[in-house]
Image 1 (cartoon, helix red, strand yellow):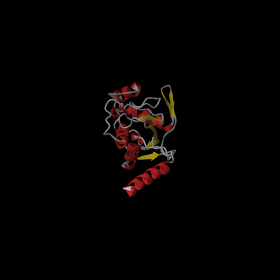
Image 2 (cartoon, helix red, strand yellow):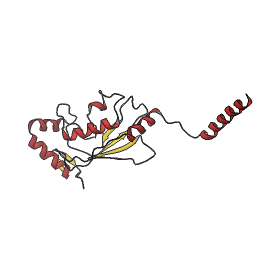
Image 3 (cartoon, one colour):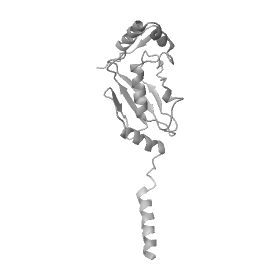
Image 4 (cartoon, one colour):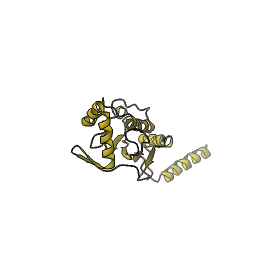
Length: 183
């Protein structure tokens, strides 16, 4: 009986020493994002960048489409994963100004799974594929940039011209776009 008590006491002391009062327990969001990142299956046109390797809740996704209107472009998305993840979607903004019907000039992204269709079973991988799909098939039916959506619906040639001009660096209408061609 005394041996059992001694073992319990040693275990308790070991736990206290091990934690040292400084080790923080990982949050549910941190555990889930660790899992999501370890299971990431990025297409060859995508890469991630973790400016702070110890902070998995803030990272960048770089998409470099190899087909479609945005071929040879390089687009950077900033991910901010909140403490309520996976019950709330991460905040995703495009850090590259782009002429696109589903991305406004401030970088806000119109992707249903980042808003009303978010579900905790979805992962970072789901978002990556959703963003990549926006570059392959821009959706003029649900625009954030109405002007780009109108041009895409009414004059695909002009839309393609505007995309290329914006990606090379130049004005489309009153808006100046920095070059975002893959180097």
